[in-house]
Picture 1 (cartoon, helix red, strand yellow):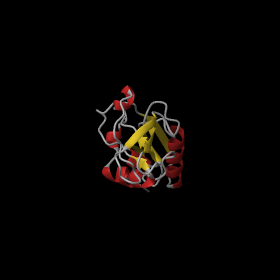
Picture 2 (tube, helix red, strand yellow; picture 1 turned 90 degrees about the horizontal axis):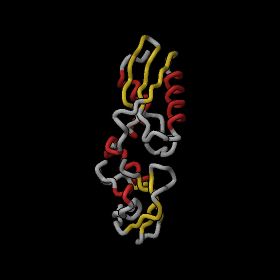
Picture 3 (cartoon, one colour; picture 1 turned 45 degrees about the vertical axis):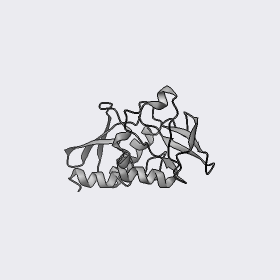
Picture 4 (cartoon, one colour; picture 1 turned 120 degrees about the horizontal axis):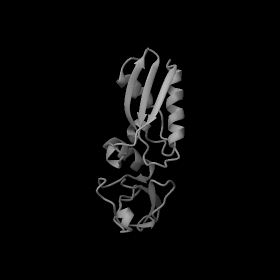
Length: 163
């Protein structure tokens, strides 16, 4: 029986993000804490990337399934909004995976709120590495991404907004 947080974290690290399957929910930073209640009981505290994230239910279902497959019988999943999730929780490896997948990772910390003001900024194209890019829409394939286009290679790509 699994009795350490690190072992559960390793299990959960095998669960891909439903919207960006190249990174896990652990790499995304939504797993905030793991509490053992008793032998086969555990509580997982999760923070959504934003309050209306439609992938949250799928993440919860995936966590529950993974834990049930590994012997847990009583699983409590608690949504935690404080502190709010931030793109600062994405580590360097997760950002590189996004880049390799064709999504430009956040280039700034959460102090960058240019997407809220409509100010356009240079975002590096994940394909050709050019900074000669332009925002096409503040809304990309999901609400947490904006749609950009590279003026050099002409490819459109998602940019993971700084939140």
